[in-house]
Image (cartoon, rainbow, N blue to C red; front, side, top):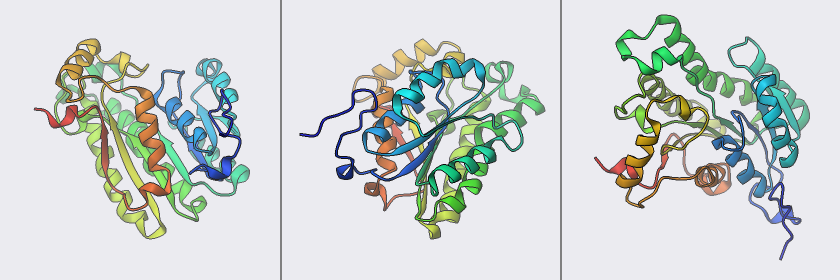
Length: 269
């Protein structure tokens, strides 16, 4: 039996792992409760080398120890609202890795007033900001990564059921996530000839830092656990495992889908 590194989760004989030799960029880790952190752990356990990003110096003190524990090859500041920041990070990934095989887009933002109010009251500037950071940045990421994905690969973003149905207190983010899921389909069509597959992963409600901004989120968690056929809400580890699978050759016949990992809650009215 191969020994497993307790920090990175990577086995000694990495040649037997499904992501051995693969390189990926993972954005959106805020702390050890982040979905992106669970994804990073999962892909590292499958043998991948990774680059991680942090948003600012405030979050760096929480994320740098995680990056070090995971053995990240790069740990770079990324603020997609700043012109050139995303492209600069991807340029550094190209210099470090040569090519990229997968990328995880786990970024979303909405002003509190716009999130909690009626969608028709959303400010123009708030809508533009939410769409730019939460959706358009995924398009920009794909464009910048395309020259580095010479052997195809996977681009994966995070969505939520509010893209498809009205979820109370989710407000304008439901509209933004609907646009993001539509972007996934069109990106998959555009990039398919190059072997680049595109997915949205749609987890059930999980108490992350981002979710804490949604009003009455605890009630949403409780209701989801009751409704879900499996009788529970999902964990970040379950989301991480599914996302890691989408980075492997096992998903080579798939693209353009929104894939739910919510204990089946989305099938129940």
